[in-house]
Length: 247
Length: 234
Image 1 (tube, chains in turn green, purple):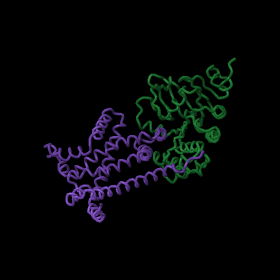
Image 2: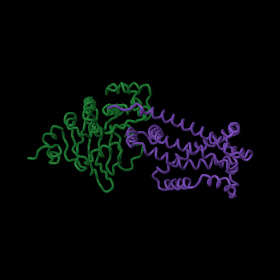
Image 3: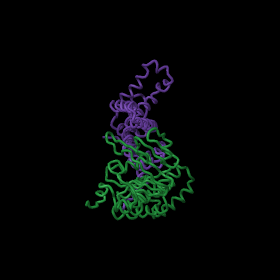
Image 4: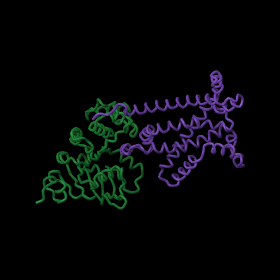
């Protein structure tokens, strides 16, 4: 199968602290890869290197035919990488001065320059799909966290991304609101979207992802199919992380 | 006792100065706002030289009296032959331009810090969301950063607008016949400073009240546009 996205030998240094020591991670087309790890393991940084919200210090990102080297990537290549991916943030980050519908339409109309009428139809269909069409004309502050995150997912879908990046999408939600967001994400996985998901939701990682990657101190400690990782982890650190009793 | 008939008559006498006062304030505020954005951009550019130059400018113009700045431009410019021979002289020769220049340069310095504060107060997540969908810098500034910064800077800028309306009174010291200029003239003819200055003060009060009301209105509109008046539910 062809790779939709490859992060190759990604290194990232913050000051004197090297948070990523050359991490390689790939996702085939239609694959859902969950990235697990304790806080400080570098999993969010890795994801943010994928769309250049962080600039890696070495390595490269490949998205289909687009190659973005860590250093000397020109702005247009980076913009292209970002236009072909989409990110869902932990804190939603919906634009607070625009309605939900405007949030979803913003990038297709102003970045991709698609006709407004067509985009509007599609945006409404997406909002319907995530179950908040009735909130189309509300502002983000008027929605609950779960509704905001579903709107953010609709916004991400609106640009027809090749790869979707989820950065702890349920970590800022009240427990009772987590389910509605995970439901939407399961739905996306089922229709064959390529997704990289940084998450603490073990249930989601186990049931939905095709592959799980466990990061420890900026390195891939172990990876494989969820069955294997969750039931027969080889690494002692992963066993500890999963709370499995040591023999 | 205050002579109300005379007070009223003076008020009518000062009214012709109103357009000039408004004109000085409006034009200076407009040029000053452009200058403020440019200076704020320099301060946030991350380039030491630009940041330093903007900081020095702001320090000088905020740290010296506006009246001194007006005098320096109006009386000082003529001392430099290079200036007198330059294309700028037709402007610097005119008191009106000198006043506009001094007021603009001054409010630009104050406005710069207001604009900078407003831009910096926009949450990073709003900008990251724009970057993540591949917006270029200019598009992001226009569609996300600026509209959100405007709401945050409006209350402070409203204050600056009021200060500037009052500061135009200083233009009377370089021969301009705006409200205060006409008032000074009326006093020299009537020797009744209390009524004349009361009338002038009343006019300024009307202007500043009106400006404050307009700013409030703009604020409400912007805030309402962001759904912040609707309250949240979870």
